[in-house]
Picture 1 (spheres, helix red, strand yellow):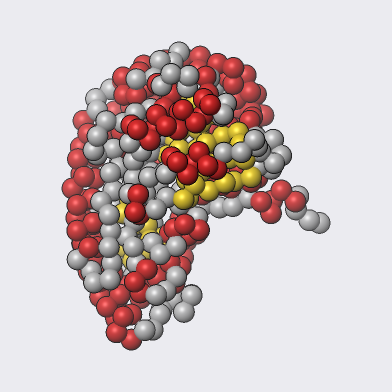
Picture 2 (cartoon, one colour):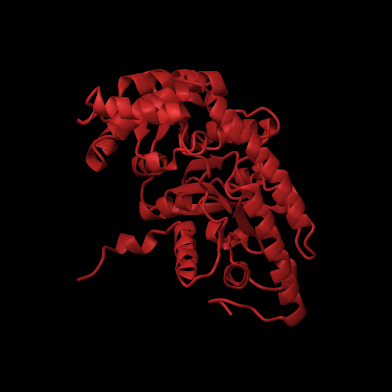
Length: 399
């Protein structure tokens, strides 16, 4: 028996693999500080959970939901994107999915033929490349460089467009670097998309976690409403990762394809969880605001801490909850440094190459953890790297 050939093209998200190695190390009695997973360490706001419980127990929302989502949530999302993003969309353009990844997958399945090209940020969320390749497309990396504050170089993006290009993927605020696209960047990407008749998959999952400047959603620009798929969800803003709730704002002409893909894959998204999502959008926003303020404080703590470690430099991220320090001065690969810090220091981060080849020399650390844990992690990292510099001896699987 053998797997289908297409399985050779699919990638993975190594954060979960790193977490598994860290848990295995903990099982031996080691203390490990987890900075690898992009998951808020806060609980879902209580009123959100209570709304879901009410829907489950009292409203008996235990049956199949409509494939694109329940009407109250689709209406609430349309109102919310108008308020936060300025996107003019009707509820009929909203599709709700179990997590945000299906929006990426459906976009690729619906639009990318064999050999079609998808331009995506590298380093970047690994599922962009994985899904583009899986459906038979060609993933074309747009390098993000520290010298450009880890923003897409829009001139380079334009140079990557060929007669096979069908889609550009953007992500702002960005995972793993925390960079943001400027208004000028977004307008130029829109110009490229219109000129070459491309679709843009705009990943805005961290949109409400932008800490400087005013976000600009590309779907609001002239000519972009009908060529933009806006991806967002509830995991990051409302600490609802386990609820598996994402959504897309989809051009009207694409909705039949997305609805068909939902029906053929998951049928629909948990009904009572969707009721909780309505409460998240329409209820008090205090918890979301408090979480954002705490991330800002932690951002300064972790970036200042990394910059105080000899041999490490770290630019200030402008959004999300990740630091992306440069550790190339130690003359080891990102994988080797990540392994060393896990097994020697008990600090779990991710190699920059988990996000693409252009992440070499960097590591990603999530600051979605307490200030106490971040402080302890920085102390351990500093001591471990000083020892590595002194002895040249690596610890871990890559040693």
